[in-house]
Image 1: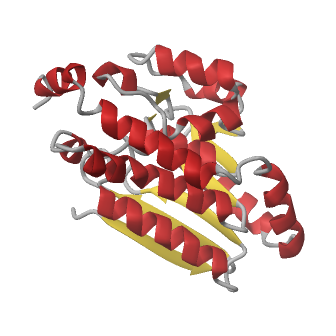
Image 2: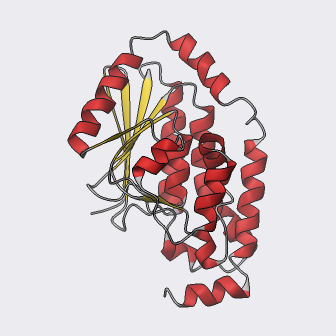
Image 3: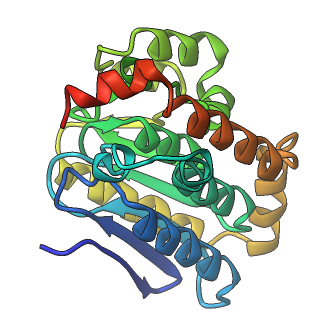
Length: 249
């Protein structure tokens, strides 16, 4: 199957779905399309609430494309690469409408950042999370602010340092990432749909104002996440990371 980003709008609910056959690891072009789709939905008067989801039954998102990562040869290219998730997170942050996250399975790295940047995140019990960046000599610099904002510095630092471990969905719920954890995808989808329908009955102006409140203190994120992307772009060229990446080729 080919990678894609799709949007379907029904009764005020915009379902935005992304997919890549490599466990939903996202290359730069898919991330750019995803950011633009979220931005467009935010300005579409037909849309009252967004649902962010991924295709497939297993992994929600395995982070950024590893194939692109191993081919970075200069800092400028590295910054552009790591800006992919930064741009999606900022699109979610500035979208004036609530975004519901639908997390059906494991999520890694940038995928955890996407989950954290939703306004109301729901998951199955299979939706374990991991920040694996330290394993290859970089860190979750770009997604860190979103994760810290949602889960707190203690939880973010725990999963960032323990980069080899998947933390279960119930742990992520206890730390504030997920609002609820369901037994299976069917139960998750029913709950997501009910929540989205309920939000469509609320005053759009009130929700837009609440969204501003939720994201208070993040107005510097355009610059902050660009700076973090530059840090990752520099570190990915280090001898340590180059040696690590050789083992994955």
